[in-house]
Image 1 (tube, rainbow, N blue to C red):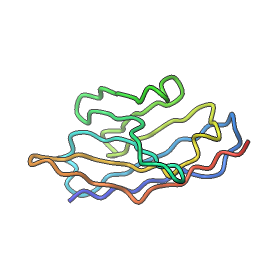
Image 2: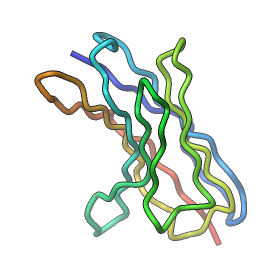
Image 3: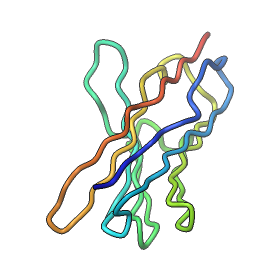
Length: 118
């Protein structure tokens, strides 16, 4: 089992920045990748950014490239999502996701709300 706890969300004005954190605990040695997803009101959950846990390779949705940066602290078992130049369209619940294995299994955090005011 892997437990994920997000933090760092809040109410921010457009143009501002936030750093979200996702702390992993439990069987973190089995984690392969960690990602951030978001779900805006009335929309489906969408992938935002991901990082390979051991190698540190990162990947992003095209819609956030240049404004979002994912990083990890291997010692703290924590993944971060830095968001710059926030837009009202970034308003969503941001979820942390981990894929562990083998065998492959997905874990989700409870989510953290990000609200961007115009």
